[in-house]
Amino acid sequence: MKDKHWDVQIDITEDDDVTTAQAVLTMPEQSRLTGHGEAHRNPVDPPAAAIGDELAAARALEDLTQQLLSVADQDVVRNARSRIPMPPG
View 1 (tube, rainbow, N blue to C red):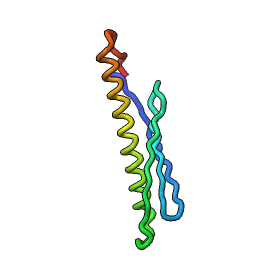
View 2 (view 1 turned 180 degrees about the horizontal axis):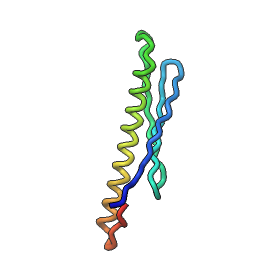
View 3 (view 1 turned 135 degrees about the horizontal axis):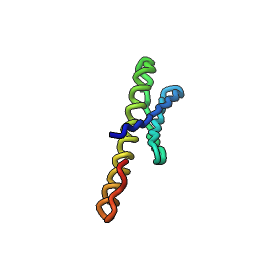
View 4 (view 1 turned 90 degrees about the horizontal axis):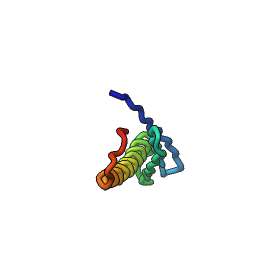
């Protein structure tokens, strides 16, 4: 059995009432995928930086998830059309 290691790094930026997050997935032998997410604080709500961080990060990971599923779907189609199976990844 071959172990694999994938890394996800999430960078968060706050600008007034907007928090943005970027989630970068690094996979061996493949290009990186980057997901983006934002959270907007309602001006009438009290500041709570942790909530904005959590929402923006979750949305970035959700975007990243959709991208990874799309890549996997494309690989499944390509593999099904090929007479030569894709190497184990």
